[in-house]
Image (cartoon, rainbow over all chains, first blue to last red; front, side, top):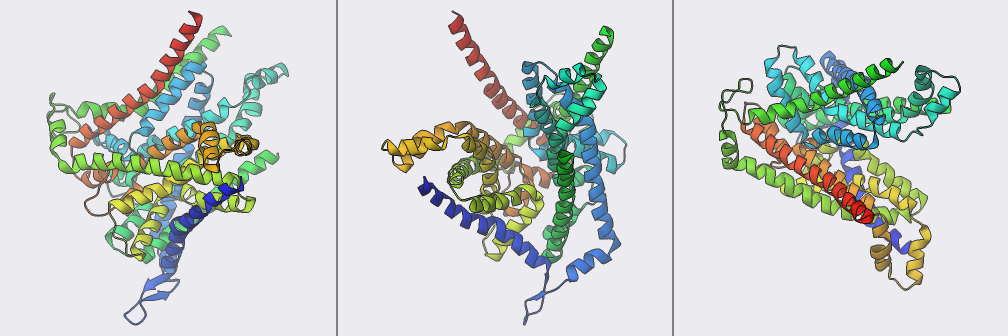
Amino acid sequence: MKSFRRLVHPYLVWAAALIVLPMLIIVFYAFSEQGNVVIPVRLTLNNFVRFFSDPIFIEVLGRSLKLALITTLICILLGYPAAYFIAKMKPDSQSVMVLMVTLPQLINMLVRTYAWRGILLNIDISPEIKVYIGMVYNFLPYMILQIYTSLSKMDPSLVPAANDLGCDDRMAFLKVTLPLSVPGVISGITLVFLPAVSSFFIPKLLGGGSYVLVGNLIENYFVTTGDWNFGSAISLIMALVILISMYFTRKFDYDKEAV
Amino acid sequence: MKKNKKNKAIFQKVYLGLIMAFFYLPIVYVVFFSFNASRSLTNFTGFSLQWYEKMFHTRAMMESIYYSVLIAVIATVVSTIIGTIVAIGLSKSSHLIRQIVTQVNNLPMLNPDIVTAIGLMLLFSTLNIPTGFGTLLLAHIIFCIPYVMLSVTPKLRQLDENLAEAALDLGCTPFQALYKVIIPQIKEGIVSGALVAFTMSFDDFVISYFTTGPGINNISTYVYATTKRINPSVNALSTLIVLAITIVLVFSNVLPLLKSRRKNNEKTA
């Protein structure tokens, strides 16, 4: 069957050119600036200096992280009970509920966010809360489905076994169900936190331009001002921050498993 | 004790009901206001079909639907074929190659969309490729392939390695072994990969926004561009999408159910 190995080779070229190379170009842009006619491009650290020396940029980054973090927390708090209740239903009802959670997700994300605009026009709340509602609305289904998947994989006889061994329902939940559902929560966090940090159309459509996040900054520098070097630097900083947070989330998962 | 249990059951139903209300409120709202006689998104002044009429007469809007569907279909077909072939090849490759491809595939899946998007935008600009339909389609194919591979690979792992060997021993060419033995066994993974690819492509905004060119809009980029003003035809467009997705979901979920019931009935009869 070794002849099949050759099938991978074209993809290696494809992936190098269309997945890896674009990332390298971002790094190159981030570490350079447009020069003059003689030297068109100069390598520099100025883009990063500019970002970290301006308190406004730091504030925007902090706001994006806060928004992503709180959105993720709300999704866990609302999504965990929902997933837990669904997992306890009869198998037929379970698949109906999963379908009901999935259906709104299949409707285009822009269209879903647009739908909230009309409703929120009626209500007098701060733009920040509107953005939070839109974020939780868009990401909650991912969290529910991830946690549900890990709960439904659980051996149903484990909780009765814990009961027999003297655990009450609360203890059984804390000692058996909860630890076994941690992988679902972790992958839920990945699916919510990651896109939440960089989201830019939810704040733009629901926050009405007054609520600027890292994603909006990047969009601005690429689409409006055309400063691709600085825009690339911001993207790189954001990608690194996300990478570090994901590293700690996963480390937490492994540590838990080790215990 | 019994009463306690009953209360718990009621609480669970109410809780799930509220979550569902939250999920479906905006959808119902949009469908309702798509029949509004006035421009308002807050006051329902009477029944009218004018926004549907307007939608069908707005060329840019109809084009955006056309491009969304066309791109999702082509990207799904192409990425499913490439993703499946590469996943099969990968399952026979060395550990090192497997690791490399998995890590590289993780890049667009774990990176925020906006990073993938500007990366592609910078690539197209560096290579002097004018953005438009071609770059939009290529971008969709690029980010769909890793998802197809992700859902095909686990099925390949469950496959008995000797099956393909046996097919070859029995006189199949490698292509026949692929087509007659391997593909049918991993069909489930291929179908779910294709579904994921279609959903990802149809739902995508960020990557499309940065890789499309002038005059080419899909539904997402069209809605984004027009929502600076209130545009009630978008409600009509949303209703159309909701209707299409509901029909597809109902058919794909109810039909297999009816079929299996009929089979059961035949068996008992």
